[in-house]
Length: 139
Image (cartoon, rainbow, N blue to C red; front, side):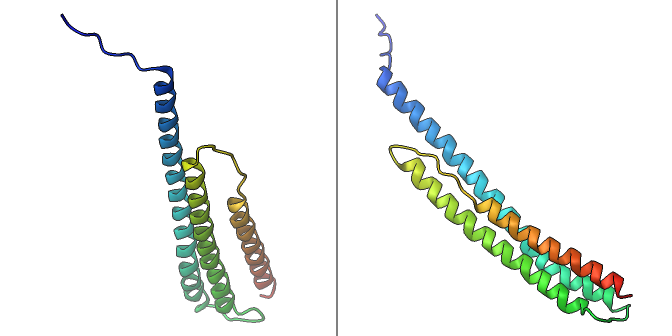
């Protein structure tokens, strides 16, 4: 005589689904954090690379009104700073999301971290664009 396995109750199934949903949310939060880290490291890498590239290019040209090496250092430091800002915002957002997942009642909260980094990159891009135009018009 074999026993049939006991069927889980609806409450047990609901609890399992809730825990699986929390696990999926945690995995998504971890993937989002990794995307923040990749983006931040790329920005920091660009920040270190831009001055080196511009110095090499400008060693073959005459400089006039805008010092390209100094300008490239400013742009590079801006990228590094934006990358560091992105890292801080990403870590803060990740920690906040993990606390929300662990709570009994999950509530969605809008985050503006990506928009902040996007606006910072837009400003850096505009300043760089204007700097390149000024430099090319002075030749």
